[in-house]
Amino acid sequence: MNIHTYEKFWLIGAMVLIVAFIATVTYGAAGLGIAMVDDEGGTIAPDEIGDHDKFGDPGVHQVGENEYDVYVHAYTFGYSPDTIEIPENSEVTFYVTSSDVTHSFTVVGTNVNTMVIPGEIAEITAQFDEPEEYGILCNEYCGFGHHDMEAELHVVPETEFDLTELAVDAPDEVDTDDQAQVTASVTNGMLEDLDTTVTLEIGNETVEEDVTVAGDSSEDVTFAVDASTLGDGDHDWTVTVDDYTESDQLTVGTDDDGDSDDGDTTEEE
Amino acid sequence: MSSATEQTEADTSHEIGHDEYDPIGTLTLIGLYFVVLVLMWFYTYFIEFLGNDPTVIGSVVTAGGIV
Image (cartoon, rainbow over all chains, first blue to last red; front, side, top):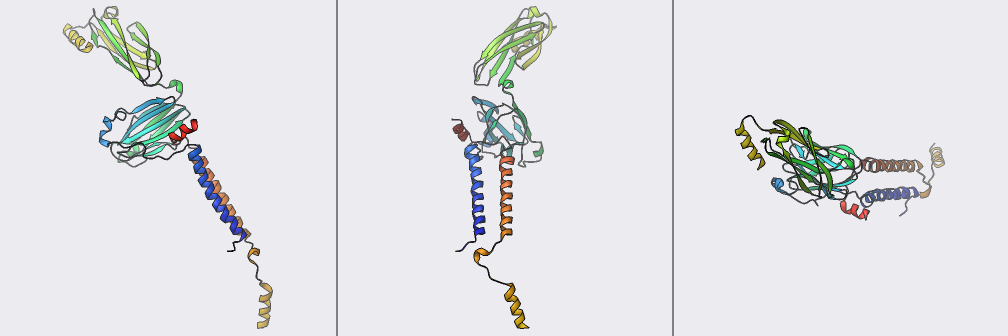
């Protein structure tokens, strides 16, 4: 067969183009690590999401140095949690599932995007290098509230990121000759130990206690405050741990004694 | 009359060989088309796609890359 020289040019040119296109995609997959979303996340019963040990309490978990897992439950019409906070320079794996209809989990303006199918766990990993605020949207039409289905993803500087939680248990009322026990429960969700100070401000008093909370655990700090030093009346208290505060009011003594005794006993035990 | 016509045709047409045919315009058009394809591919993949960070990555490949 006699092929014209020019014809050879464009035949070879077309083949080179095809090889080049395939080569760029191969470079993306092998060199840059770009992956397709697949079914590796496994399956889950859509009506038992609440019983799952991670999806039951969706949110951010640290799994390694700069590695985080985020469990997200998509439903009509929202995401739980609705605000996800992760640190910069982290590799984040999102596990997303739906309890009702097909949704999507789309981090707007990025390539982080997956369909969320009830019964399936969508697993996607992405690297977040810079602090940034992203919106998360559903792009699979899921019903009349579809356009309101959104969440936020905040990538914050490493210094501003923690997984600390503060819960305070304190009585509402206490007798004048009694002590008020204020218990601050500090939970550290990070893998590293957390060295911090728990501060209780009550009336004009400020009490501080240093505490070290081991990784992935919690510590209770109990302050005993003599009601007599506070004096009768209402006293505002605030417990502060880093940027977290809890506050309420403590009543010392009461106008009618009956209430005070009952309230006290219940609260303290 | 007819002989005059035959004379003219014989003067104005002649056969050329296979490799003498020289469609340089077609070659230029196809070359231009290929250049446009390459530019579009470059824009779509490297600017639109890779520039749209972050991208879904495979943890296995990344782990391999880090090691």
